[in-house]
Length: 479
Image (tube, rainbow, N blue to C red):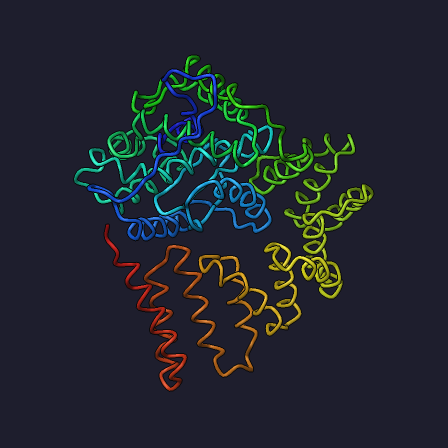
């Protein structure tokens, strides 16, 4: 029951609306509506707060995968689509460790993909089609424009319903199912369903975005069919699960729209996506050793990296190294291979060797978040926090919500016992981890403790006060 519910529960989490019940012309039309301010619109300032609030709740309540390499691979594709829009920097792109084919978007620019979306796709273009559809919902501000749906409910309350429904759909046994079929579902039916016109708009504009970014528009229709097959066995569910039913007609319309556009080759080589897909299967517990060994027997580089990751995850460093050595025989330079090798050495407490592996690639690519976070981790393992902190601060300046960086900063500060600000910094960085993990009250308490300790340091006191004020404001925000 849980698997079926999550697969097709939220029409908000809709990757299934890739069709438009309108006359399809013979020429591609690139007409993205101008969305400005107006009566009934939630201003973009509030939308940003809403998106960040949901981001923290998602981090607290859902199994978010904290994996910089995976996040960065998806962000590369995501950014190429975003570049076709007027949206600024998104709040974030998170990967949820769930095998179902789902994605969702929240006002302000929070986007989430389930691991199952990646592992069920055939190529990156199919994933890009889902991303583009969700991006279109945000660029067209479909939440804010749904005045009737939101009547009597603030968007922040609505965000809470979204997270609660997602959590309930992942609960074990009949309890979670009962919750979903009960009050949460009734609320979702009225408040989380995009209108058919909005779905058509997201389908049309999303396809324009992905095509303009160089992705194959046929892949949107292809993945629509994947969704149809995935949900074909759930006809027993109530009608509100099928606000936008999967029909042969809708799939045909999606294909017709794609056929109007010139053919585009996939922008990712098959091996690139295979590496992403198999690695995602491993970290989301969707792959078995037998499956991976069968692929390795065909001398698949992607499978070798995945199987090495599988053994690494189990703590079997010897087997992980043996499989990784097979991958190295392909004589390919791949960042994931470097990261796996570094982790194997760290697992064996061969820290100096790990530094030799990671230092040069990270230095050559200072913009590469995954490599540089691993370098910072090695510095921390070497008890050299003064080297780790500058590396991490470079990325935090661009993304202060990055919990991977804050956790490493906290670890580094814990080691930096020579600093007169040692305890204060540990508390500050712990507060950031707590805050962005959704534990807002605990974060504020940590900062209050830091503030008391820093009372004799005017500069630090001012810094803490500014951040504390902002945290308290964010926690008390009501839309």
